[in-house]
Image 1: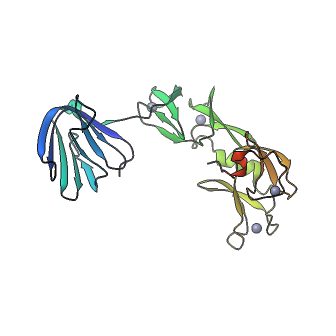
Image 2 (image 1 turned 90 degrees about the vertical axis):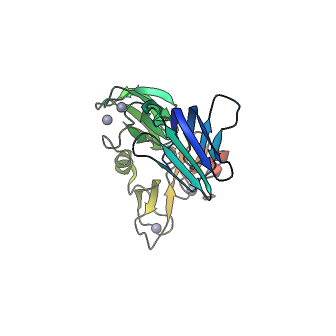
Image 3 (image 1 turned 45 degrees about the vertical axis):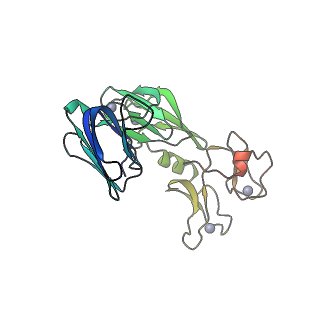
Length: 254
Ligand SMILES: [Zn+2]
Ligand SMILES: [Zn+2]
Ligand SMILES: [Zn+2]
Ligand SMILES: [Zn+2]
């Protein structure tokens, strides 16, 4: 498996053995997908001239951008003939959100990340975060994220930690509904409010994306998620109505 989609584009010889034995040479586009599917496209038709779907193993040469894919008795080998063909990383295509302070390149936001198109600086961000126009002292854009209330933090966790801000606001703020010990703010993939007596008590709830607007009759906070209101406990039946579809599903923010 590879981290992202990679392409080799240019003058290449493509050799295949196994069921589709042969060799092609031309200015082609070789697409290597994260699931190790390799597709070799030329200028004609919609079908690749050579391909291996979800190959067992794919490796790229350390130099020159050549690539070999093997699946059972099928083998596909790409040999570039000029260095310009070698190995372009296909970038994220996202919405421009600012300039990269490290290299002056363009930062784009796509889904759960902000990436620099030039130097590859990468920041995972919560999917529900809003990237603000405002820049941090470090030069990166700032984010707005709702976890109980709205927090504005730097894009770069090393510069400013969302977790610390949320912890400062809500650590030990609520009591465990099962044993009355305090709920701590912890990161388990996403941020959760989990019982401090873990592992004796394994109560834990993902922190919803939204602001605390009330106290649920069960004693836990109630969140306005934008699509409805819900108790911190997605299974709570005492929450005060207005539960939208998304809220009823108990979705949890990252
Ligand atoms: Zn950069
Ligand atoms: Zn910063
Ligand atoms: Zn507990
Ligand atoms: Zn409740």
